[in-house]
Length: 207
Image (cartoon, rainbow, N blue to C red; front, side):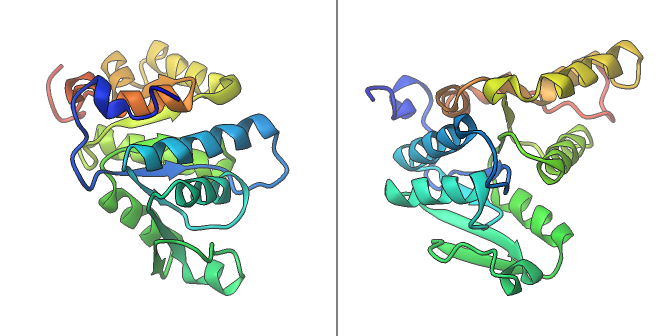
């Protein structure tokens, strides 16, 4: 497709840019999500964005890895030892980083990334997304967080965020801690936009 390389349409992403991708490990989900994961992997590779993910061989996680590698991109898979021992690790990763715990895995993925893209997923994906939003709110993560709302999957969560704001459990300025997009193309394009679009304000700063 003509617009696959979004570097032509905005500020260049720095060489060595990496994005952590949170996604499902289920193999029983609708094909619309698998297709989106495959497309996202293709776009990451074509835009020379290194994929950082959980290094698994199942579900959307595996589909993204397969697609990135198929299109000549790089994948760093971060996976705890017990998952390696269980045979869940992808065998063709550009680099495999094995951790002792799930907590170390999430920390390492955040450390390696220049952005986060959250695809649809289960409780593990949701936990990763909420944690990285919390870290950004506290000033512990200062990079873009993009929610890839395929098939309107995250609508209930986004409504919950709005309820938090309405009930004064969260300040309205924190809407800017993340950005919602509907397609893989929009997710990649968002990474090429000027970073001021993504708020870095923490709860320790004045509004």
